[in-house]
Length: 80
Ligand code: F3S
Image (cartoon, rainbow, N blue to C red; front, side, top):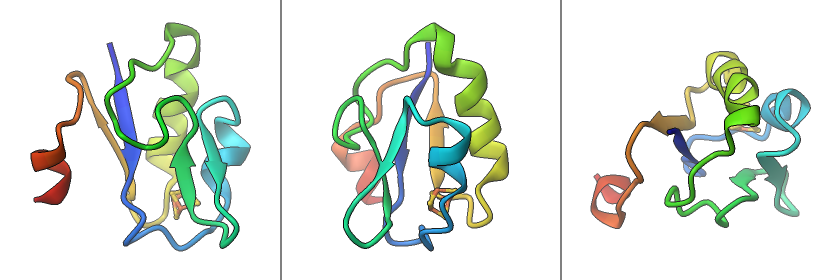
């Protein structure tokens, strides 16, 4: 299983992730990315059919803002 969230502090709104994985990522009014599935909480499992897209988006983000884990992200992890 895969979980993901976007570090909005480092996202530069480049727009690559929504292009690569439109079922997972969308942008706020400033173009900063977030995960549609769980409102960027990192707690909702990415559906298996989108895992390849997620991997591509993860590899393609120029600022490494897309965090991916096999475990759900907790609030403590996100803060660190
Ligand atoms: Fe931001 Fe990276 Fe997507 S910079 S818009 S999270 S590809």
